[in-house]
Image (cartoon, rainbow over all chains, first blue to last red):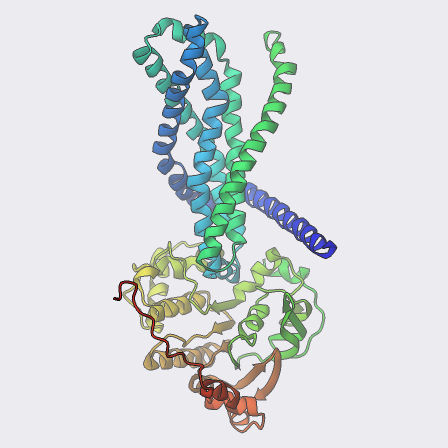
Length: 269
Length: 284
């Protein structure tokens, strides 16, 4: 019993060490890639697959989030005679929380799964060893462009989701539920600050890097066979999902502290 | 750049030869795959490693290019110890090698031309694309696949993929080429083409080759030296005649391709082959 617990503990610490080392190597390789123009073509290719192909699903996600929020919250607000405040509630929820988090979850499924499956297949078919055997660092060639593409494009995709979330919420609130359009926008503008939009987008940077690093790591370390690749994809999604929620919580705490400390000082600047 | 890595290398003396391993042991879990192996690969010669499946031939070859690290022992490239180097330091050294993987390991998202020029793009600044196209054409002609430049690996047969992988392995004109079962999956004529190519690269360019194979015809044709591995140890080492006349029964059994008496006894045991007829579900 003690032996099993000890072996699991050692294995867990070993895995954490390998993952930390992978994060470090990936970050160094990504920073170096920024300064080398010949790697830009690799980054562009990944940006196309990661970004352009994700726009429709992210927009659909955002639109449904906005529409569902409008229907769900209308009853409570109307009961208190505050239905005109529906816009402020929907928009602040979309730009601060639901837009970034649900976009990241959607990307973890769409991009994370694809990255893990691609790199996992390359791993089990010795393509990653082939890259190493030709004197090229696979982290630099495979991981860095994917991290940079996710880093740059997740915030952009969050903006798309936010826009469609706002539009979806507006259409349901004004066209279907009959709320006055002017009042809807007025209360929205009063409630949502630039800071709210800003932190939603900044969250995207962290979510993008987390999705890319976890998915690439799972692909690089996946076990042989179709079952190994499938298991790695599942683990990548679960780990990305939990990381997104944990990062979201940590970032909310940090940004709240920053907001409370510095935002009141902006009038002095 | 060459100087940079040479300065970083541990210039401990090793025995003669372009590649050598000393007291190499490799374990996967509790399974000892290579057990205290020492060997030297001579410059400009073709060394063939034979042995039954799972005896550690591929593992040994992967140690020679430091794709795997030993549990104990040392690996040397031109008298420089490489098993303790970082991946960054190894990247420069690996440009001296070509490695043909067992399954080809072609990049399936790249076409044949892009696969072959991959190492060139990584290590050289390409200024004249016509020159690169000519190089790709000549490498493909060497393996009998000129005209397949725009094909993707998924459109090629297993044998064709292996030949493209060989063209990629020799793209940078390496000093050492490691072949992991180069003729497996090829028809006899194409296998012989690969054998001729190994000989040609050795004769014309002085390439050092290490070939892992089960194919004894191929081994006898190309080998200057044959090494046989069994249970993680070297049990025979010498030229083709030495191996043909080797007294070890495992060597004789392997080179003649005969099934062992124990395996035959298992097959002869009554009741091992079931005569039970399984009927379909809808049988009435």
